[in-house]
Length: 411
Ligand SMILES: [Zn+2]
Ligand SMILES: [Zn+2]
Image 1 (tube, rainbow, N blue to C red):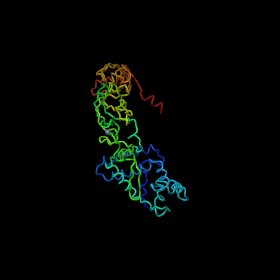
Image 2 (spheres, helix red, strand yellow; image 1 turned 60 degrees about the horizontal axis):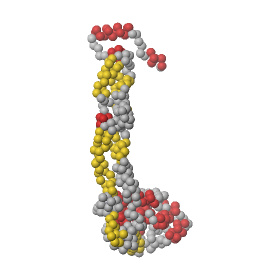
Image 3 (cartoon, helix red, strand yellow; image 1 turned 90 degrees about the horizontal axis):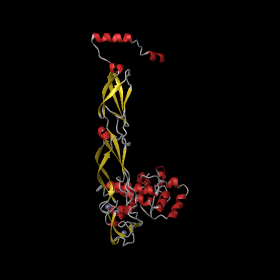
């Protein structure tokens, strides 16, 4: 079973798309992968080069509706196949789309074994085809892979170098200190993003007077490789026939990666998880399309004492038995410094007392502030002298109390 061959020729798998992928899906998948494996990006990397060749081949077939149809029917593609014959063959008994033509992994068993299928393969050779295609591509432009790259990205059919696509939004997370988030601050951030290439002004190519010297303005070239003849869009001019050379700064992409230094204002009262939108500072679009937005996600740090609940501050404060029983005014920490808190007589442990407008200034509503919520924690007196013990015994006698009465009722 020639499983290796099967794998290599599963163009859908090569591009990582489903068999039902739209032309746009295929184009996008190819662009993404081609950028990653492009030999310019991976100099001297044989594996990347092979991968790039495989990608180009898969794209060549799948991006052409006619070729794709043949491939879908037969599980392979060659220029020698007459589409009508392919269709007839695809319908032929026992070799329907599922059994023979389906490039999906399930159909692999029956698909490309030359021994098992009654089809004349003598006209072409799979290995020859793929190598031939690669070699033809390399020779064609005289400028190496960059030209293939531009050809592919150039749309090759007289279209502009690439389509206008809005830039992606970008998202970055920043950690902001507890106090910085409360009081507000300005942060200097270095944000990597794609900017319009200054060399070609986002076109991806530089245009000179005259016609393309490679195709003499026709936009197409013919390549021969063994028994195969290729009619392909001119890789040098991307099929436009114009005297274009791929921009050597952005390699045809029209955008370049740059790290931008930004000053981002963190408003007083910014909460954890808050998103700050900076319009137009995401990735640049292509061909003059608008840039995406930049989103800064704020992560605020914790404080050992103050806990933020939105704009409120929560804090636990220990008080004595006497303060709780008789009531008192005690000093408690707030984010502004010390504040006086009134403990009402008879305060119970765990009770929450509110200090109005001692919380965090609102980042959304001007002038508004949260509260500080003080949870009291009772500290039992530590007594060792006889006199204190006597007083407490007397106190207990004067106030007979069973704090477990309610508990027993509920058991
Ligand atoms: Zn040309
Ligand atoms: Zn450029």
